[in-house]
Amino acid sequence: MPTTAAREQLDGIRSTSDSIPEADSDRISEIRRDLLGRKSGRLTRLLRSLRDLEPGERKEIGAAANLLKNQVESALEAREQILSQQTASDDEVDLTMPSRKGWRGALHPVTTVVDEICEIFREIGFTRIVGPEAETEEYNFTKLNIPLDHPAADMQDSFYLAPGVVLRTHTSPMQAHTLEQYEPPIRIVVPGTVYRRDPFDPSHSPVFEQIEGLAVDEGISFVDFKAAIDFFVARFFAKGTSVRFRPSFFPFTEPSAEVDVGCPMCSGSGCSTCKQTGFMEIMGAGMVHPAVFERCGVDAEKYTGYAFGMGPHRIAMIRHGIPDIRMLFQNDMRMLSQFVD
Ligand code: PHE
Image (cartoon, rainbow, N blue to C red; front, side):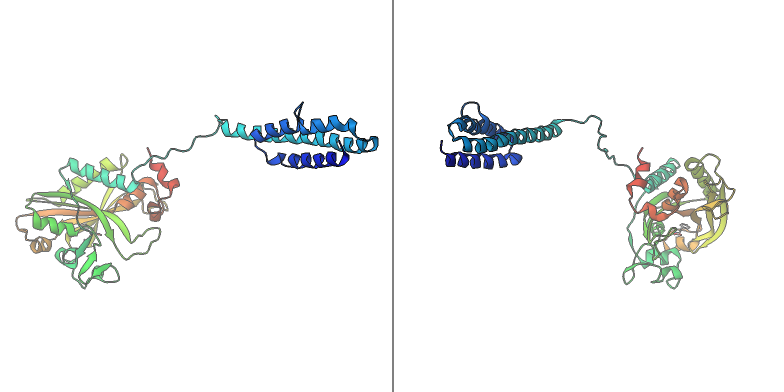
């Protein structure tokens, strides 16, 4: 074989060799056969034909061909090793790998509080109903004996949807709707969302839940109210939780009261949660004001009743020791996942 032909073959073999690092496993077998095949491999044949060259050329080409053979062999081996590692990692199942977390849905802690409260009142004869979130000024204020020049009716405090129409600032308008629609005896609880132009800070939110309660019949007195609330607190809060009724004012109840329970954080000894008072407020309440009965067409001579409004967000905070109401709106899984049972 003439020397030039041998050099050309060396070049051809070298360029095939250069493609080894990119070859897939089929191509690797092909190259191995093509270059190193025992009978007709190009490199094998080249080495075999060295003896036909002139002694000077033989030495030079022989050295180059042997070097190339070593390079081809080690490149093929290196590439095969890389390919075998890749398939191994594709196929292998790592049994020690932690499994992916299977998320499970759960009720929001405020929803749970609402459901539990309504269920406790159901046991003593209260029906759960709902009402609209958009109310007229008449139902949100006037029928409840709140004059429109009362600060609560102010544009600053309420979200107006249109002149005379507000997002309800409390669930009490459902007192008026129910009194107009049904004959006593009436016993209802009304959970629902209410809206106020309040800041969004640790203890306020412009949107929150309320549960309205209303019981109207002949001969209902404040004692019936106290008994219902004692029953509720005993069922809902920890055993031995104390209850306190404080005089208060609402235009639609007379007398009016606020109800506190012993702070569950410090059991009444005083802490930062209850601002050292030992108590947490859970609702506003009172005996239905005769003016409300009159505005809703109920005979105030014949009937009496009590009403209350509680805040499930506050109650959920008290129950779980949640320091900031905003945590109940953020839907942070680190917080909510604690309520998956
Ligand atoms: N509606 C009152 C409030 O939002 C609560 C309340 C309801 C008070 C019923 C008395 C009777 O603050």
